[in-house]
Picture: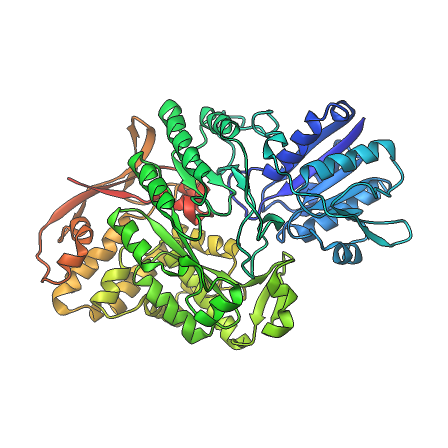
Length: 626
């Protein structure tokens, strides 16, 4: 019996597991093969982002040392997995180490040079490549010369790297066994609850675009291939039966294909049967068609929570040209935002800082232009990902990069249009902007601050940064110093958790608003501005830390859908909710005092989902007039 371990590790240290979808596909494909399924014992080893190397080693090698260990490699776990591979080789010198995933595909020369303990690198879709490799290993337990296995790189005993011809993409995706319908991946934890932060699934593979920064599954610029409607519907039914609250599609352009409308129909029918799932998150089609509009309306009509993404990346024409995105209809975004607003639908935008052709001035100009329409902006630091055209033309763009301290991503520190000093200051801005804007610690205050106080969104953020820098409070100073050299997602989540759990920090933000921003409002509007921030405070999600006490003013209530949170009645001098709902009309007149009382209600679970701003948005508290 050949023993095989397939290892995944999530990106972030979250309270819940990340679903090991890639490992599930690999195990399901091995188990389903009639020729080798009975000859292999396959286990999935799934780790959260915060698990350290000693704990992973104990889990992997404490009970048994496998004959084959396969790692699903991405930039955040490349080094950890190489270290574990070295430990594995000490336990089992003749064991086989396989690396697969976007980060190592077609990178065999580098991988073998840096980590000679790795034996094989998979270049492309792994399900049947890995199956063929295991079949070879069954017949050749000590020899490594799998020249007939397509789509791999391996190092021979004399140190020569050999790469076999690429394997053709899987055209009929239904021949890939489902990791859900086969029961490969467990759905529930010991308490009978859905065990993952979200349910991951694919409806198709591939992407027709060739953006310079992207390597979507190694299938950029390719025809999209779809799973059958019948299979997808069965998987939806399986998730719903097990109470999965949120489906996240691993698709590149949801809303582009006719099959996406069919998926939406089946999703709605599934929820009508089970009450689940309740939310859908995905990477939406870059060019929003009438099909996209129909899907969005259907999701709204049936009460689905979702975030609609404007994946703009930059508003600079020069940077767009280098990204190979200049001619995309996605750049005509204003009409789409207006339509989403008219439909009362939530959306957020994505920008990248550090692209060649972008300057600090052009970035802030684009950021504030976008923020005037969409305040929720996710800003990501520029990465050079393996196999992308940016990497192939790094000298042309003058990229200066650094590998992450705890990961293997190449972070851009400078390029032909921005300096190192400018980049370091922008990373500090991104830390604050991602917490306040992307993660919506401020949500209701942006438009009034811009239109009445004359402060753009970037000016508001810079004002708060300056107040924190000038603060003598050690807790505020410590928070200010959390801003990293690279503003990646783990440190953003850590900063947000600090902010949500520290009343001193929350009071700092309140005081800054009252002392710095409120005086910039017209005198007639200043009392409203005070009320506005208090409304902002109460409408945030409830940070329900396990074992901790709820914030003052909140209690648990029972509803038909289970426990929920409710605030004590909160009194305001103005009907803030109603004024914000009619803001474009209200702001042109003088505010009228009208004592109003609200109760705020929120669903539990924010603590477990805070790390993902898309799902975290589902937990925003709602005001009810009393």
